[in-house]
Image (cartoon, rainbow, N blue to C red; front, side, top):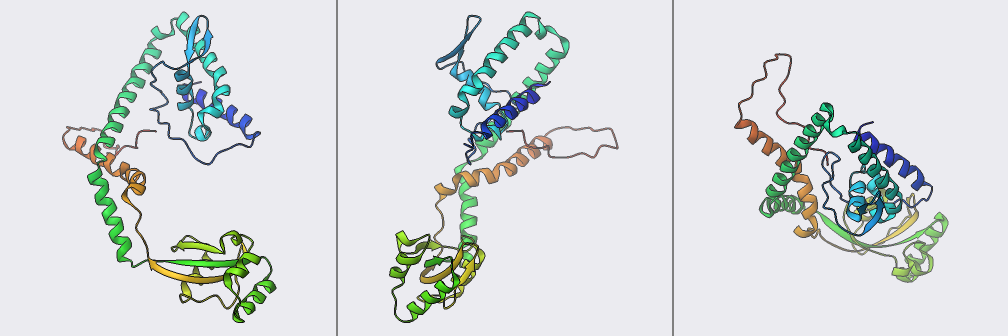
Length: 299
């Protein structure tokens, strides 16, 4: 079993055990590793001692960093105790392999050379991409996106609503509004999701709400409330549009990470094209169609 398959098997075992705990988190920690090989300085507290050799926290972190992304959806601290036996087992396996002088085997030496070349190549590429991801470049992309946003003349609306489960109640509440009832008072008394904030939904643009709600809200005049209940999968809405304003563009800092991620592919292609332009490449086989761009290095 190769090391990637071994890591996958460990990840599968971890996920099966963890799913029973029902403590899955939605965010994915950013823990990059190059072709599954984590380069880690030995540091931190001693977490175990195997045959006289101390194993440190940083080595345990390296095991975590080398797991597939689906396993790393859970934080390191959550998996800490479950990964400790893995580190101990790997240490015992390494000792057994060293004792058998597996590092001297030609096939192992070849694999080490290939892995070393992969690590060096990918590290170089990642550093080049990072160096090319300049503020100047990101600012230019940001300015283009904001210019497009403003050119579209997009507006956002400030609305309140009263959400109820029963259609007849919604119709009755509209009648109360027609008779001079106060929207905020009725929202506090009846709305099932926003009563604590007077039915206030704040400002929002298109795409932020369910389609039925959005269509009704942006079709109404400012200062008006819906004359018929608006049905959605949440129930029946009575909507009051209080204000409208041009969309406020997001700040550069709030978009920096998204902008940087959007440029990885473009920068990678530029680097590859530059390398190929300055190289002499001969592919003698007529059956091989030359491809200018390779896949991105695995994260």
